Image (tube, rainbow, N blue to C red; front, side):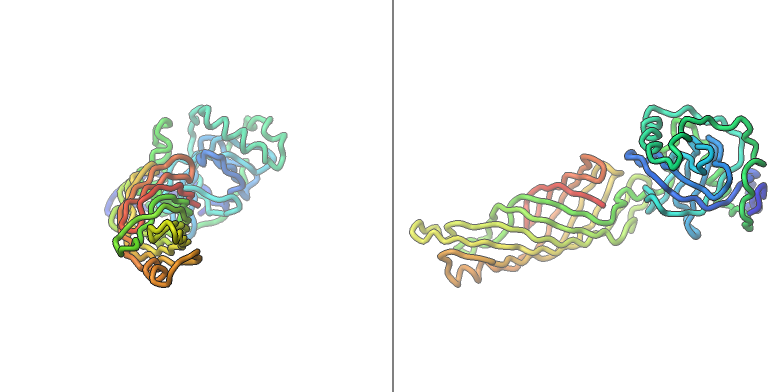
Length: 343
């Protein structure tokens, strides 16, 4: 769109505010540990003014909305603070370029919070021109000093509405998300678990044996039945391998037989997640036990221990840190707890 272009009229007689905007490419070059403040770089001569609202898009999808927090003259770099996220994009990776729609409006930005200041100090350590962090913004911040934006057919009705609604947000509520949000946004997970694995004892009665293992999960579907803000569901395919040992399996002190087993587990898990803090799940699948070594064992016991069992149960998860969760499983195949890393 050309700078100063107005959005097209709203459908069905709905009137949206007249909004002028610029469009350019924006590249993410850094992210704070809090994942709320980013360092960005654009293709125009001067960075946007603090307080400006920017909507990032990729093709036709809204990615994230920001408010400009601080500009660094002579570097084309500026710090932006997240104010709205959209499903599937809770954080952005450095090096990725998006289409940016910047709302042109006079706005006095809220003062940076203490967390904002910590994030800025963290990101400013990687500026291309470190001295830029010490410079103040130029006193003349008129829009005509900025490079012209590339041509574009115009803002869509939804883009204009998003920019206007985000501009009107109260500064204290900038990180409140009104759109449905995927909180289980990391599609991969590794789980280290310890507990009781199920198998058969020498009398062919179901029993449990202590051990530990590792599972890998891939969340391939989100927001299937639940898509409300701070509440959504997902499906995860999970596979795992574990290790445990049974000593004196025959309860004969003279035999003292020992078996080392490796169970292989494959399950499909359905998760219901409440924000980023906690959730619960149900799962179903199969567990195959395999005897990998034995001492003083007998063939009949090896066959019995190499059982195939149904894997079915419930569990819960609770966040204990960024990308880290505690997990508890209560199932027919396994009862135990573990630590989950999401990535």
